[in-house]
Image (cartoon, rainbow, N blue to C red):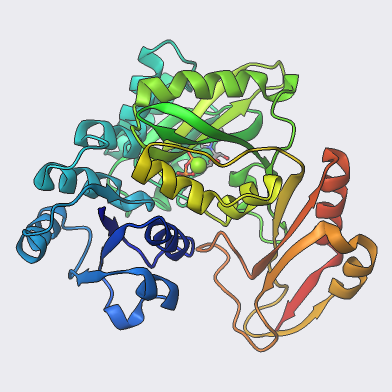
Length: 405
Ligand SMILES: Nc1ncnc2c1ncn2[C@@H]1O[C@H](COP(=O)(O)OP(=O)(O)O)[C@@H](O)[C@H]1O
Ligand SMILES: [Mg+2]
C-alpha cells in the first residue's frame, strides 16, 4: 500500500507511527518542511521517499508540489497525526483521489467554534461559545456567554494563549496578551475535572478507546511553573466517575465522523456530575500519551493504529492492567541543569512501578516550559491500584527535583 504521511519527523511520536506503517507493509512517502537530512533517524529509515516543501502552511502549494512530484504513484492512504496538518491531509486526499476524512469534516476538527456548533447541534452539552475577531466582538461575546469565561485561539493547541477572565477588566488584560491572534473563541468557563476520551476508529466505528485524566487541569498546570503536571490513563474505564464522559465520547464520534483515525477528545466533569464537551482532535494525544496507553495494557498502539489504517482491522487484545501516569518535571532555576536529585531514592521505594525515565541530562539547557508539554523531561509510573499510582506520581512530583543555574 502507498501511504502519504505528513510530518513524519515531528512531533516526537511521528517516527514511531512511520515505523509502524512501514512494518505493516506500507510504502511510506513522507512530506514536511525540513531537509531530509534533519529527519529523525527512525523516520528516515522507514520512509521510501521524501519530499520537502518550503512550508506546510501554504496548503495549495503543498498539494501542487505533491501532484508534481508523485503524480505517477497510486496512493491508498493519506495520514496526518499532527494537528496543524489535518486539513492539509484532507485536501491532499481530494487531489489524489484517496478515501478518508473529508475537508468539511476536517475543518470541524480544527475550528473550535464549528466543532462545538456541530456537537451541540446533536444535543451534546457544550460550553456556551462565540467566535470573535475584534476587541469589541470579544467583549460582546463575553457578555453573551457570561463571566467567568475562557478566551482562546480558534484553532489552538497545548493550552497556548488561553486565558480565563473573571470580569471585563480581566478580559481586557487577557486580550492585551492575545494581540497576535486573529480569531478567538470565547467560552463559558466550566468548573470541573478534566478528562480525555481517545479512540482508534475505522469508518467511524470505535475499535479502541482510552480514558485519560489530567492532574491538575491543563490550564492551571500550563500556567504555574512549579507544578509537575500529570497525565493519567485509567485502568478502570467502567466506574461511575467516567461513565458520562465515555457515553459522551461514544456519541461524539458519529457526529464528528473521523472516518479511520486516531482521535483525542477532552471533556469536563462538574462537581454535580454533569459532563461537558471540551474539544476533539483527529489525531492522537501528544506528550507521550500513546506510550502511556501502551503501558496500561502492555500493547503497541503505534502498530495497532497502523493496522487499523491499512487493513480496517484492530486485533490488539486490550486488557487494562494498570493506571499509568506521566509526570512532567520542570527544573528550578534557569539555564543549564546542574543536578538531579531524588531519583535513586524513588527507585528504591517504588522499583518496578517506575517504568520509564526520560529527563534532560545534567549539562543540558532547560526547555522553555511555556512552549513544551514535555518540560525538562518526564517519568512514567504505573500501578494496578489507582490511588497507589497517584501516590507514586505525587512522590515523583515532590521528591524528584532538577536544578538549573
Ligand atoms: N470552557 C472552558 N472552561 C474551563 N476551562 C477551559 C475551557 N476551555 C479551555 N479551558 C482550559 O484551557 C485548556 C486548553 O483549552 P482547550 O480547549 O483544551 O485547547 P487546546 O488544548 O487545544 O489548547 C483546557 O484544557 C482547560 O484547562
Ligand atoms: Mg485541549
